[in-house]
Length: 370
Image (tube, rainbow, N blue to C red; front, side, top):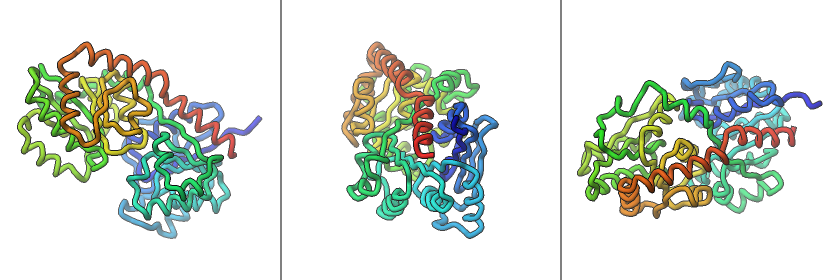
């Protein structure tokens, strides 16, 4: 009988909203796994987890391009305790892959985002170290398609695969009982249709398009339509100014970064429509979560959304706020259509995209290369 496996996931930062931590928690429940570690290159934010995960932090400053000799030695000592090294981000993954190679440890690399968002330097560093990886995983077919030709050469088909992210259905359901509400955070009309979105406030997520769309939708709606966005990021100031200048600014709300992931889930339970007008994606877990809760969803028409969610969501042209506004308005004024779309999405996602399935697929890779 094969011995049980010790695996360490390497991230830039560990947060309560981390999909990787969810996968690590689920892997710890598998009988073939002995221990699961999570190494944060920078820091560890508070999050809910069981007591069986081994959490490590190098405390490398976020803006540091290099690591010190001491940090290198510490990382090497930590990683030497595990059978499999599993990296997830370019910066921390670059060093972790090199250290794992030095230790003769099998390496799994997961790409969580479309490479269109990578800098050339990031692509080169990532691609070069992927040459020493044993398995390279993409979270969607679209992420795999975003590899440049030379990236495909260093990650040939025999070690390249797709494993979709999954969601914890039970945790999503339990969050409906959380003693927190978006109504505690911002003032929302009791008669309003509520549109929500979750994500970092960056160019990728296109929240400016969503704000404009909801503002415009209010022009033609009998009911007030309110917007809540959870998340923080570099564009917060710009988006706050956009809201201030909007015609219906009192109906547009930035909630900021919600410390607990369950608060994001509770937000999803309280909204009517989930919208994500992203310009590009990897394989968006927030979209899975919103659909699994039963939200009617409207997404930008990009392959990362269109391929997996073709029949269970509405789609609009990228950056077309008028089209997005019309779709939000149509769902707001047709409760039956909104509820049917949400019901179909919930059934499909809860059946096809579980965190258990994701964890087991990674286990198969570990057993293959160990």
